[in-house]
Image 1 (cartoon, rainbow, N blue to C red):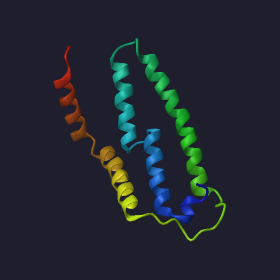
Image 2: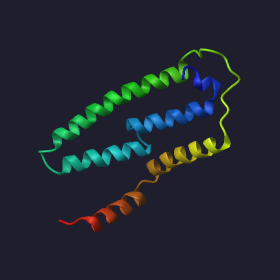
Image 3: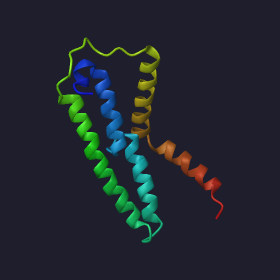
Length: 126
């Protein structure tokens, strides 16, 4: 991973988007996922607020590790100099689709939220 962004800037950028989404940084989809899960815990009342606090602490710890990986990817010295990293077209398409989904779900959030909310309401038994 050291120096990946120098060998293949596109892969470095895609890893950046994916790890920041996992860390819960807006405007990526991971932010809204964490927001909804932690918000649901807080809405259930004081009995689950501790769970939201633990979730936030775990997110901060995880973000520290994600940022360490990104530091190595973007500023680390490559172990050996290669011409670059070549991916098969299928992998390139799959990665681009996943990154686009992370960005679209993060930026255009309302329609997906309304759809999920109505589906959850239909399933609610109590």
